Image 1 (tube, rainbow, N blue to C red):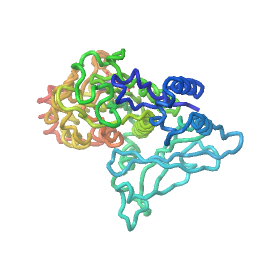
Image 2 (image 1 turned 45 degrees about the horizontal axis):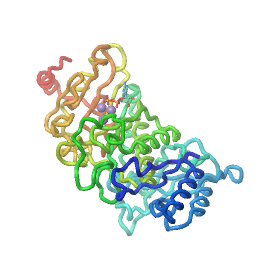
Image 3 (image 1 turned 90 degrees about the horizontal axis):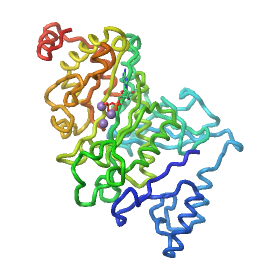
Image 4 (image 1 turned 180 degrees about the vertical axis):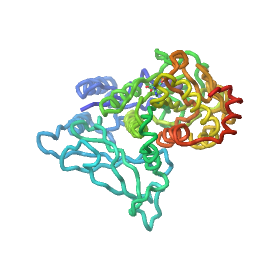
Length: 434
Ligand code: ADP
Ligand code: MN
Ligand code: MN
Ligand code: MN
């Protein structure tokens, strides 16, 4: 079973007083030796109150006993597995989950039963008619429980079978089920940026409490104790994603210290949304274990600090084939004409991020360019050179809903058509000869 590790407090945080991190150990054996050392030094367990498994103060034997149980391999004794049903809560960005026993291992979500939850506790149903039904839609291996246990991405319906308002997956699945969209095999590569905060003060990881680090510059893809904070979380998450079966393609430290990015894709159609949501779930669980708070706020710190986005790289079959650059330009033209609709669907608080500074374009104007990171849409040098490839929509905020963003991109570029006049005007304005 995969063991998720928390970062060591000493190297993650400058100030030990504000250290909140948990197990410094790579295995129970190592953990015991750390505990022994701590005991010898001070006569009491320094880390114990912060160690998640130890909800209450206790001696180290309890640590070992709980670890032993958490790591128990149930396979030799029962076919039964644990399925963690995951869904999106009432804010549209919060994740919820609960567990149930399934009789035997499964390979496809259709083998799983529907389930329900109390929607009045998640802001998704009134108290007098509180039942919301979970439909299993995608399954992943569970890196926390290991074995045949699974994570199940669900979407939410009323008992009558109607998608509830916060269920954005149902509409997205409809768009991705459209024949025209299916035929174009839409690929999405999503760059999920996120910020880690110190649990008690809600201030970025690695930042001196109540003060600021040195200006941005050394942190992007940086290494070293004075340039990088939270690498263990990023790395634990990377492996957990690979284990789970998420199509993760890379990670990097970001421009603002305490901020990271992972990329998922290219993934086809609705899968992009399922994978990003599952990857976000894993990140919430890992940061929970580490005692670090995850935020997807698009501009966690005001001022001269980068915001957090969710750049969405997109291509269709026609864009990837010879002559694709013309198709990309036509897609950009359509996107320019629906800028407002896209912006309003690209995440709450994005106006604080899309200022025209810090590698963003202004929220009010649509722009595109080759290799230009100050544009709404960027086309890579490689795509221009080869005459085919993909475009990058740089507008989505880190808290966007990938079901909404990916399906809207497909809809605007594959199903929607502007009037001829609007098209001609926009082509002139954007210098797009299509
Ligand atoms: P950036 O240079 O903007 O930081 P990244 O390397 O972080 O870009 O992310 C690029 C993403 O685009 C990756 O997830 C990659 O898989 C994805 N990608 C690559 N080719 C395509 C394509 N043809 N269509 C859609 N996505 C693609
Ligand atoms: Mn990137
Ligand atoms: Mn980035
Ligand atoms: Mn990017």
